Length: 498
Image 1: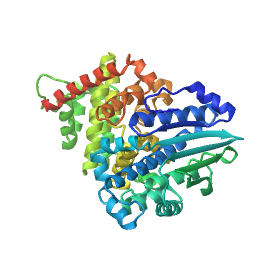
Image 2 (image 1 turned 120 degrees about the horizontal axis):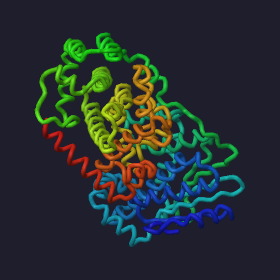
Image 3 (image 1 turned 180 degrees about the horizontal axis):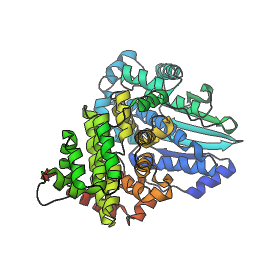
Image 4 (image 1 turned 135 degrees about the vertical axis):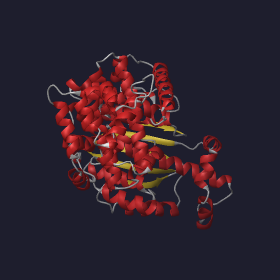
């Protein structure tokens, strides 16, 4: 089965599985579209075999091995083009000086050389006698020096016991070099497999990376990564200041006067500044600027003040003192603007609209905590995911304790946030898992976040939950593009007003 633009035949996959025959797909390139096709083949294969639970682990391993195979092919044509002998230690060292830069800057040229040379990456999937066999092949046989380097990397990858250990040592010492193989080995360990289940060898004119998964040995563990550090950080976070808690008690009482709320808020200059910033933002789209605190309180109402306390104090406690944190808060406020407009288009009441808005502002607070634990960790993981063309949420799924949505929900519970906010934070990447009574708010936060990621080129149309899109009357990429452009234009106009 060729993968270059050929539609995947699900019936063919099911027939191969029932007959114990191998499923073979091959390609000479690894574009994003090809990766998605490869993921679909793996997913259909595992589902037909009744092993859906293995999807994230196996997909990651296949992507990593395919990327390595493609890199090996690119090396061959690159060294040949530069008249260098890849088997020579001196030539290899010389060639690798500029390999990455040259091949990235001239990717089309070297891709064409691979096509002309007939170099391919081949995925083979097979299940026999309750054993899954996965092979990724490329027709550039590794030489002796390359095999030594590969097995040396494997030996070093096998020394790590947890992803926490790998992230700390590999990231800190080598900025992520070799991390892909380390994670692959850890994924296999999470499946309960030993190190003998994976190997790389040469067979004829092909290099073969092979994974063997005896299904009788598989048990998907739930290893918590950074769990102790994260739990400690959540429990050590301060509660809201006493005067903020007093305002919350006041606005939750009966027959409260707006003037009294304004008087309490006026004792905290930072809250006053936050309130005025909120009321004069694109969120309310007022015709003139408001500078009076009582007027501001009357405009935002009790729900608006309550939500201000949640969002502004969260930012004050968690901080915005680094570029990374500022970027995350900027993203959150953009998501909030999009969610607010989605809610208004649905003609929801102002209280419901405000709840959606503040839930969106707080949806990524778990990331802030992670950035406090390990500075620049999120940035490095994001870069790793981009380089491997895997969604960040998939990395979180397979690394368990790094799930920022769950961490954020724990923080929200600690601070006694309303359940709507807790659920929006917890399920903003998994909207279909949200409890029915919170579904509408969660889906709006999810869609707003995905639209921002879509606009930034982080996700594509196929990665949106179809059920959620259809609930908002979006059924095509053209409709999504139109909605995205509309929100982006309105956001830029609102930003220019401040």
